[in-house]
Image (cartoon, rainbow, N blue to C red; front, side, top):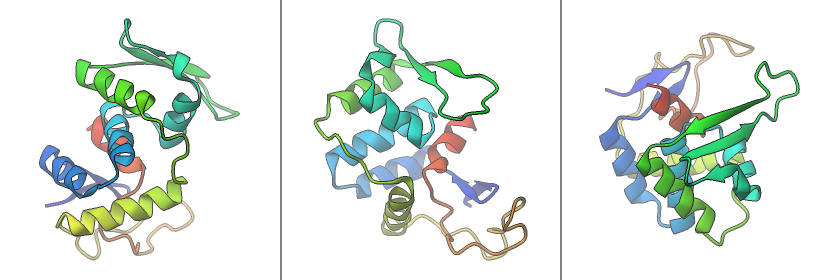
Length: 155
């Protein structure tokens, strides 16, 4: 059964591996791996690509400066596992400089989820629980977005 938190799918390890198999572009595989292995926000990962000096391979950490104006903690360090360190190194070593917008990447993720045969979340389970769209049924029956990896990493 698919797990979700506020309309965002939480991937199991098997679902994550199955999803990766559907991604045919190596640079996007590297992007998805670094998202999953760090738990960082999509925009933070893109800022890291532009500022590779924020990654310390020797300390196995990433310095993240918040992009939010009213952030309570304007900066933080993200500790990395050995697998996370390898994922970040592969991402930074990749020659690709431009990545899809978050909305385009979310569409890609839904397409890959469908191709991977991931189970759609049952109708009625995909209602937004808060915010402007509270109680409205979502069209994204796979619950996939760039937030999926942060939520999966948290869980």
